[in-house]
Image (cartoon, rainbow, N blue to C red):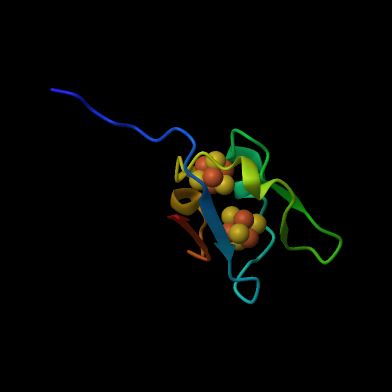
Length: 71
Ligand code: SF4
Ligand code: SF4
């Protein structure tokens, strides 16, 4: 049996900033530094192209305002 795994897939990261409380959990947990806290006190996508789709940010966000989809 052959398994095909696309290691070059691009993941789309969406954050609902209306809901974001700026807790920083996504910043701390992302293994590839997709997020940083912005001057507005909310998270900011600074490296979204590096997302590996691990879903850690989706799981850790206390207000469920992050969605990650494979494109
Ligand atoms: S899914 Fe993983 S790699 Fe992608 S932004 Fe969230 S924590 Fe970072
Ligand atoms: S974990 Fe959620 S609420 Fe906290 S900073 Fe990230 S997006 Fe905002």
